[in-house]
Image (cartoon, rainbow, N blue to C red; front, top):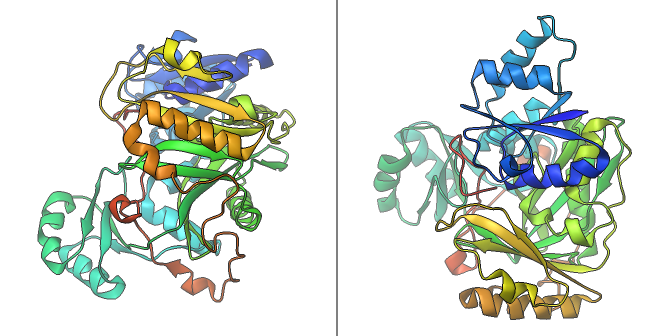
Length: 428
């Protein structure tokens, strides 16, 4: 069986590495052949919306999947429909469903999805004119975050509004495209949950992840994170999304924890950076379970093998010899040229206890990125942030499930990030 993947970045690479033991073959589509996944499998090189290349991918593969959200949904639909109208012996199925990707590509559609499913999220308003921005600020208040609805990632495509005087500059910078306005909410911490839904409707969910960001980029994940009530609430939200889309594959939801409650920030209809720890520290990795789900195989166990810390390696790779001298450290080099803010690789450690895991993570950060140590200074093993273990109150009215949001790291808050644009970003 051949799996076609639109996007040949590091997520595609890790999908291929997980898929070869399952007897799967891979064919990628990306803008160029010099990609992380291109070292492992053939790549169709050209624009991602090229009808001929998409048609070839559909004809040569049994299933088409994705390693990032912002694929050209309409072009893929047309290409697959056209191939089905021809004489090809096999035409690829698409998984996950394109309507889930379409929702994740548009912040407004994403927020409305959460609202429709009674998943608490940030208070928001669509902005399509200068007057609409003024109305949104008057209704939601300041401070807030103005964001492009599409094609923002890692803190890009957004601007903080702290005073009414900030509106003019923000509108001049971002007003050429449809926007979304959100209110800031200070949060206790950030978490994510990842799960897979198979073609037969079965679901497997991984333990809760505690995430630490800097400058809008994920830098560290600790998992499993001990907050049972939050984990149950996050898993329930994830199940609602998986079932609503009749989803097939792996999906992640990122949350802010605010006053002991979860606020959904965004969803990612793909394997996720905060789940890289599952390669070494879970019975079945997120990458293998994605492939099991889309090919009709039984889902594997998501149970943890230990307590993991995953550190993203950003901008420039450290010397491999230095890190591989660390006992039990797992090294992943994506083979990408160095560039500021770019995800070039990651490393993972797995320990028998949460205390040892967190202590080693802090020690590694001190060697790699000393300025990031304060991010985890209060993340002692087993310590749940204030009120974060408390069960969230039940929803009162589905029409009122909008909650305040956004964030600014300098004040213990982070702006919601977004998926990559059509031009490949530093990496998912």
